[in-house]
Image (cartoon, rainbow, N blue to C red):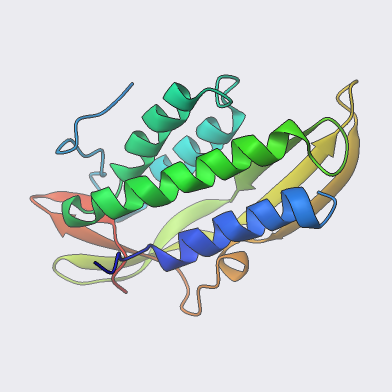
Length: 181
């Protein structure tokens, strides 16, 4: 069975692992979905939870990574969650593994920042959401918490999005991230 992947998130996770290693660098039910009341809300909430997951002090534990993978996957359309759960699990597992022995310093941290979100286009059940000035930053820190090395890049460029923005879809009155688009 060919599994669909959320292509640009997979690329960001690959870039993240590359930066960490190569460059020197509440459990949810399956049918529960966080989604959002607006297209912007689902994107903002997802990015906040990605940041929270990557800074969770318990992320080195498999149980915590599983909880986060379920939560992050719940931002996707219901039919895409199983695939996204696997993608999120792989990303979090890889991040936790790479962060046990980062190429620089004693730990790495990743944060996604942005100014705001805005809808670029909206149709009856689909929308494209721009994440204005979105930057992904990786910082390697020493034992004292000092930054040893820092790398940043435009989020949408790093994840290989040719079109501006992230696609979302409305299902049963709520908005979710989607692979489509």
